[in-house]
Image 1 (spheres, rainbow, N blue to C red):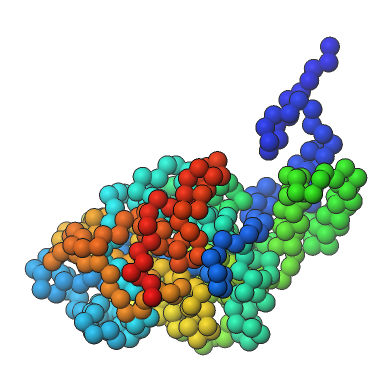
Image 2 (cartoon, rainbow, N blue to C red):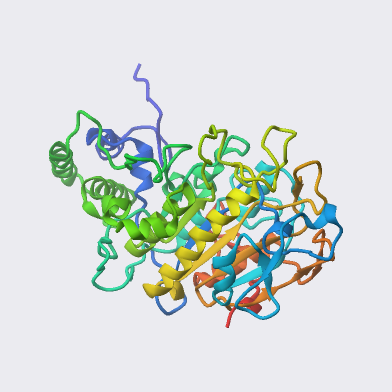
Length: 481
């Protein structure tokens, strides 16, 4: 009796695998690539940019929850246990004041917008991050992050940076990953950020940098493009060529899934063997003075790498805003902004330790001001949205030597892509505890991000590809103009 074996394909369950299907699946490993590496080289799809030059985004994630009341929404007239010890300073925008530890950003206040009315209801790191990075107040487990949606809906930026690339950046439009995440998140959140959610692994980010292994470390090298030790570049090309010849005998009609799989493989080979992506990640191509300008700490060097990636054609780069370690301090994790104080052994929220604002804010000031100025100098700020926000803020009242999680009201910084520089949108009450006016909920924040990038929030997506919009919110149009 003949037993008919079941064979699982990407289209379901077939009773007999065809020669073509076997070659498709076998072809991935045949050339020395694993499935994750293949899918990370996602194919280009038509851009949904609604006119003008393609847009990109650098999303700075203040993982742990930055204290808004000690940085961008200070309350100097509140009680001592509310306002903390830091003083506000004037900025280049009359009437707008921010923390004394942010003097460079104070001088650039006319380049960015502050939103002081961010709000949602999830006070956990895991849940709060999922809310903040998806733009959904109640996301499901596989709701994709912003970057995955951008990678799905927007092709790699063919415009890239300034023509000629006099700074050693690879030519725009080369084969670079559309979505990159620089520096890991720590274990207090599920690793959803490494997936593409319901969009699948093809739209997951390429993650570079883990804990102390980051671009600020001496001798750091991106290993993501290394081929297996037993598969040198020449052999990779030879295997790919041989596989293409074998496949050609049974090629399916153009546009079929098999042809898409071939494109996946070819793009993966180009990514591994071509110079574009490697060069974009290579900070040794930057002048020492530029690396110094951003700051020789993880946040500074990651933001410099983010600028290089945007200039090379990457559409969205998420950067975990870890500011590194003070001299002599041992590594704990990358949750710079989770400043509870001495209870968990982290030191005072106002101190100069790794979990203290006197250490973290000056490095944000150095790195983010350098990024904004550098993007503007290169003509990239008009087409690059810069976002800096955490999963929530911190409690209005100091508790011991720290502040606890507080999603009810917090702040975000946005610049570029038509954002109105010098604007302060929304406000908090007298202790920065609750939103006073113009609340910005996750859905509206997400819709605003997509609008800035030229993606209509009502664009249909969903797990089935077409039933739900990319955002259920409305863009805050007052931020633009």
